Image (cartoon, rainbow, N blue to C red):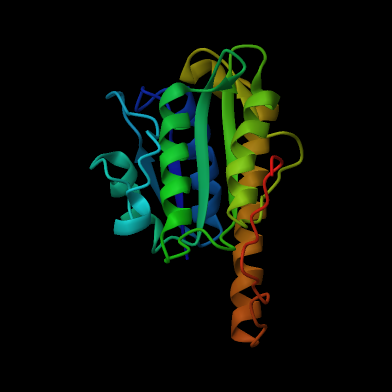
Length: 210
């Protein structure tokens, strides 16, 4: 089993990376393979609503979004990490996830269906709970079980060294890793026992204006 951890910070070895590595270390101790995917510091366009993804099964822009989709198909779970910018997720990770989840919804692969996910945030002081609510909405619309920890998934600090000093925050990361591992093992056990996936229904779209 494998979990992909997405570093949504422009800094490859910064505070977000430090939090994610604590989760990854715990997952590894539980026998789960991990890999960290860097969204990077290069400009990343938001969705332009061209809807070309419905015809080709991927986003029309060839960048980190489609690169990640290839990894995501073979992953069993996901952790998305980001710094807090103005009480929200960073602009790059927001554009990344807008296009990733929309293009996935238009394809037939169901890359994220029933795969567990969680979001983690790093803040100097505040705004992390609002950012957490923001990213959790991507998971629930894609029918992904959201994994929790003992508290909200956040750490505090402006440098990796300060993040490591947030002992409660780092503990939250470890508990998140153990809870993710437990869920994945339960899912695998259910699959081996022949527990079927939930029956699916066709989506019915309704509009508020008729």
